[in-house]
Length: 179
Image 1: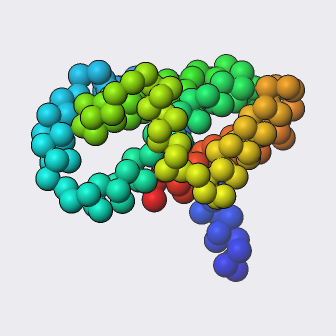
Image 2: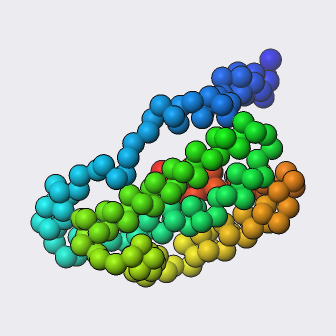
């Protein structure tokens, strides 16, 4: 066997071990947390001790996550509807709920820790000011919207769905959120 055959054997083994959508759904049910129940009092104290320059650096980081989570919450539903199976649809629905929970977490964090008052929309608009870069705009305001809109317009086009789900899972979640 040459090296490429070894690689194919390894890929086949990994594919057999990969959890399916229902297993991923089961795992999701077992790993719940509540953004409503979090106590931010210690975070608020720590925030007050950070120098203004450090706070500015962190605000850009927080804003990227907050605006990104809301962008995905706003655009993910076509991927749920276009899923190729009921099992995949169930799992993707968990992703939509999690994105909304993350967005709510940041809304609470902005209010309870950073002291920003106002509606969630007002807080998001404030956060968007920190994310006005060409790369952020390209990913969240152009690519993500265009790809999920294409799925919304034709949820039966599997290749369009794969492109959009790849952008969401691989780039937004797999690269940006993990880094």
